[in-house]
Length: 324
Image (tube, rainbow, N blue to C red; front, top):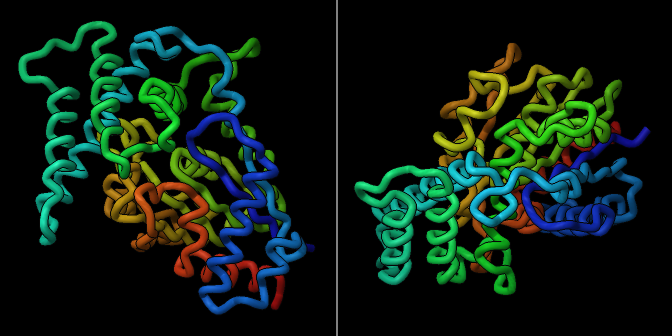
């Protein structure tokens, strides 16, 4: 039987799950080739090396939520987005302070201006203020190409709504007709893709790392390898304290956890997850490794998967499960 390989995506607009699965597999194959596993390329792209599944939940975000700040988000969601953006900006400012290279003065000015918009001195936190502060700051941040999170054609307001998916998941609201909240329905989508009897290798990206962590705490089957890419789990105000269960720890089902981050990935604030995630009973902790991708926007999953440092251990784990 082929080993199960499950991809879990992050935030974003509507997507074609099959097309994304193929893109992720092609990127993984490219990374495997660079890592010296060229013999595995056809197995990955031809679907005989693994039973590859793409856990898609993006359509659940298209359901109308509570309205707030004119973006289809609630006031609680708006405030959480502002907190998330503030920590992202603070992490970028900290990187500038530590960087020994010549500073990009324009980028630094933009970051400082965005921080002032997110945390204005003496300003009250009235209803809707989180949405206004967040949208204004996001508009400022997107003046720098490297901080355009979803490309040149996406407006700040559209980006604000997409980033709001993090808040909508973590605020545990938006119940359906049966009382199941949005976060519960998302975890059900991921759980349905896992092998509940045999082993599953899981690759999770961005918000998907939070969803996956919570899903695996209730998963009975073994997960010999969990790979997280560009994870926001370390965002100490907006994400970490809202992740369940508390304190945050490695799921019992996980036998090995590799976490990859790029220095230029603004989403992966506090990327060294082992500094605050507790081990499971098998003493498994995330092991964080830095990769460096080209281009202004390094957050996409495909960029991570094309890295040999990411693809190599994944292919080796598949080989072990296949008995090769």
